[in-house]
Image 1 (cartoon, helix red, strand yellow):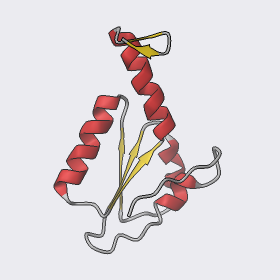
Image 2 (tube, one colour):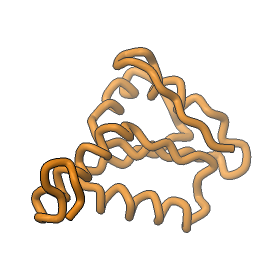
Image 3 (cartoon, one colour):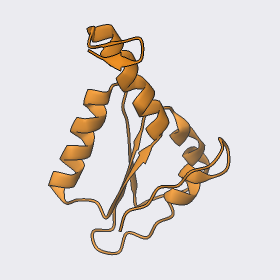
Image 4 (cartoon, rainbow, N blue to C red):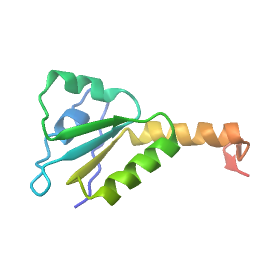
Length: 103
């Protein structure tokens, strides 16, 4: 099963998504790009691993490794709009994206 949770900042998307039961392997993974996982310090989540990423390369490598490991029941990607913004900025820095167009 796949899903997307959408809502305004502070609406509880990250906190509630980490409540997903992990029935098979007993573990969920949160891949976080914007420090929103800091709110989880207020909650006990023994079935949750958190990895913070700072580049799209880190995000892709972390996601692929998590899927390949088969260690997790659920992989939560937070925050997709932030990851998209990182990707566009990295494309601009690389010279492969200019004026809103890929070149």
